Amino acid sequence: MKLLLARPHDFIVKLMSETAIALGLEPVRLSSLDELRGLPGLEFVGAVVSLAPTSTVRASPGEVHAALRARWPTKPLVVTGLSTLASARQGVRVDLPGVELLGFAERPARAGAALYLSEADLRASQGAVLDALAAHLRVPRPARSTPR
Image: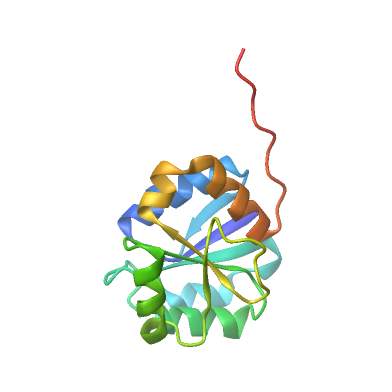
């Protein structure tokens, strides 16, 4: 199973890759929107879109989101950014109109909502983030190892 880093930013590539691997997922970095057409949807459990002003994919968050929804209308979406959830909710109204953002501590997740993970979330709340991400992507959470 794979997780598409659809609009990668430097912090996403490192932190989200580590998080995906911890869930047993293979992170796949998109380098252009054209690549999306050739990706087989069955291999991917979801996609990650960064709200960062810059990305290696030369498209806005809205353009990437539209391309993802055209290709894979029901795949779970994860949105990442440097700001808090409250700030991201304000920004998403412009960048991704109509997308509802839920923080990793908000349960239950609502159908069609995107999970928002900030850089601080990814750095400080690894266990809770893994639980929320696994639930959002509908993948099993690997068993936690117990200290000896």
